Amino acid sequence: AIGSDHAGVALKNEITPVLKELAVAWEDYGTNNEESVDYPDFGEKVAELVSDGKMEKGILICGTGIGMSIVANKFPGVRAALCSEAYSAKMSRLHNDANLLVLPGRIIDGKAAAEIVKVWFTTPFEGGRHQRRLDKIKAIESRLCREK
Image 1 (tube, rainbow, N blue to C red):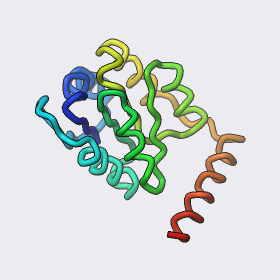
Image 2 (cartoon, rainbow, N blue to C red):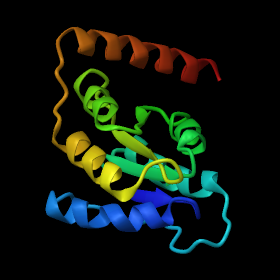
Image 3 (cartoon, helix red, strand yellow):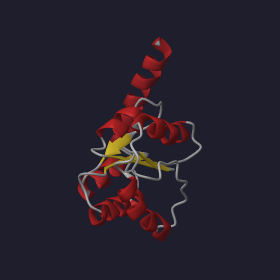
C-alpha cells in the first residue's frame, strides 16, 4: 500500500517503477495530484491496512515525512520509520522490523528515494536481541490500548 499527500505525489510517481522492479505488490491510496489535501486522510488509509494485517508493508510520503509518521504510528502494530537515506532504511528493517516506510517528498530526490526503497524492501529483520525489544514495544502498546 502506498499513499501520499500533495507534497508527496511527485516522489510517489518516481518510486513506483522501483516497486515494480522489486516485484512488490502494492496499491495506490492517493492522492494523485498536487491539489492541497490533508495528510492524515491518506496516512490513515495505508496505516490501517498495515495495522489490520491486510498489507504486510506500506509507504507514506508527505513534505517532511513527519506528519505521516505521526499518523501511522498511532495505529497498533505499525512501526513507521521516516527515512531520508539508505542507512536509516536498512537499520529500520534490520533492528526495528519497520513495516511502514515514510519518505520526505520535499527533502529527498527520486534517486535517493529509489535507493531507500530498494534497501528497505530487501533488508530482513535480524531478530535476536531486537525481537526482545520489539516484544517490549508490543507490551507497552497492548497496555496503553487496554487503558484507553
